[in-house]
Length: 219
Ligand code: TYD
Image (cartoon, rainbow, N blue to C red; front, side, top):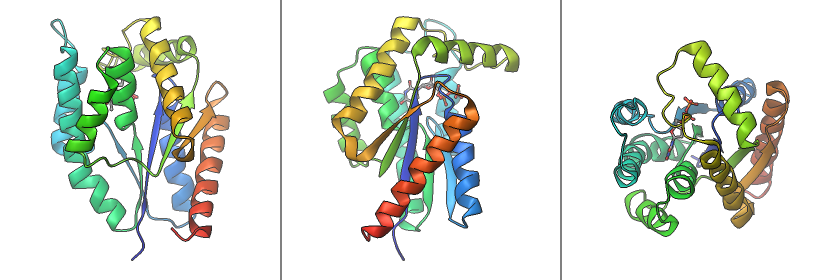
């Protein structure tokens, strides 16, 4: 059986990741490809429990070091129970966020050392990186205003990360762009400033090209 693919979708809050993940699953399913969506933090029952703890807020919130370890703990469960088995079974697994978010949020955002985050990933997650990461790029102010509108509309309780300030989100955006620039072969940056349908179409086109290239190269 041929190996599958692991694709991550990253971006600032309000960049339209969830819609892109849904659009990708629909488009690849329509081509009869074995595709599945997952997310971080989360993706496993244990990871979803950690997600609830991480995003519920309250008190002074998590210390950055504790937050890093909890995000990583959720990722260990995800990699071992979902990501590796899916890819080994030949599936295309599309994850709403992965370790790029830890580098961006806990690293650039909260000031944890990026080398430490990468070392932790290497040790705890066997240095498993996505075959392809889509970075949905939109300026932080646009992303924030979109996600504030959505949070108000849904009365969601996941506002803790979104509640942090604009400068924080600027650093997140810059980190995603820097990660893509440092490893261009496995990242595609997509302009996410436009209408959701256009962003989805661009993402679907990018993934279709990537899958075609991979087939052409026999990987
Ligand atoms: P997300 O699923 O994008 O939230 P939403 O449901 O609003 O689309 O992500 C939840 C938050 O978790 C987001 O603000 C980013 C944060 N996060 C980190 O800080 N570090 C990480 O490693 C991950 C995966 C997410």
